[in-house]
Amino acid sequence: MRVAGIDPGTKSIDVAVLEGDSVVAEESVDTLKLVEEPKYLVEVVESLEPQVVGAPSGYGAPPTWSEEVIDQERFNYEVLLLSSKEAVDQAIRAGVLGAGVYKALADVNIALSSEAPRRYRVLYLPAVVHLPTVPWWRKVNRIDMGTVDKLASAFLATYEESLRGIRDLVVLEAGFGYYGIIAVKDEAVVDGIGGTNASLGTLTAGAVDFEVVTQVGSWSRFDMAAGGIVELCGTPDLGEMLSRPSCFDAANALLESMAKDVARVRLSSPRASTLVVSGRYSGPVAKALAERLKCMDVVELRTLSGASRSKHAAQGYAAMAAGLVGVEPFASLAKSMRLAEACGTAVDGLVHPKARGLRERVIRAYVESVRSPRLCS
Image (cartoon, rainbow, N blue to C red; front, side):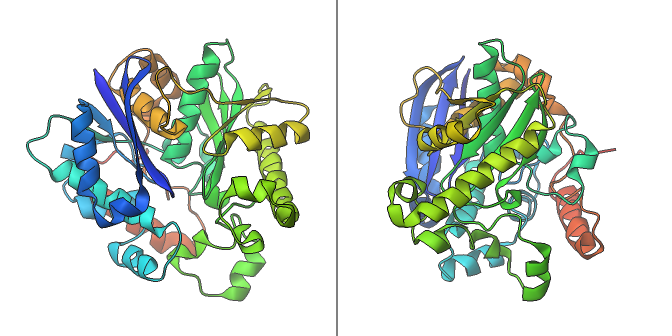
């Protein structure tokens, strides 16, 4: 079976196609191109001839086939993106860096699902917060514990490390705009810190001091895509930051934040002595963190056989989808991670009184946009 995975990155959207555990085809498309022409990716996917497509899934949902979705626009914008079409379009007009990926994700998914006749099935995937292996108390007042792309990288890392007999690890995915850290214990995800919940990011300010939040008073949906070290250094390119002397403090702020978040997450997988770094900047980040985390073996995530240009997350997307449809060698890991048992929405853990409206709105959107919603008991 040919299974494709699509990773919606801030800078590029990558597609990887698997047969077994090997990448047999891959493509990378500039995200901004797909903002203007989302159906172009449908043509790319069609040309690669997959039978199953792990669709870009944002903040995630329980495993859901596109034919189960009765309102694609609402499902994509309100459930997968926790936003609205109007808010995304407004952010794009305002020139918000990273807003384009939101529009590209929704429009690509709608196009993938509406094109007929199709020779493939489209499968939406869960994020960390949906997994039953993550205790509920860790989800309290958390949304971003690792979006689907971060979980995809962790899935791939867990598979690769299992070949070396390692079942406990921490995975850090260093993307263009955000990083995420996920704890794995006995080949199951047990905790995570996602990009907007991390200490700091390239684009995002991350977990902002609540004093700042209350003093500012009014925030828009895409203020989360500002306030990172790009404000200190003038470039969102982490590779450039790490090599530019004038960005020394900014780079140290980011790397120290990463190291501290790794230490926090590792508490949930205390036997983990391996940190696997994935993503666009895995090389320089792994080297820098190895100097800060002497207690861990810091390694770069290996790509699957046959891969040459697709990002780790795209390969992980394909591997997760393959596992969910029973394709080995990934089906066994999907079972260990209990991916098929994922449930609920990304906002289920919100208990703050001010967040009650958000929680109710997203849950309602999920229930009303799919045929058989899988809420958590």
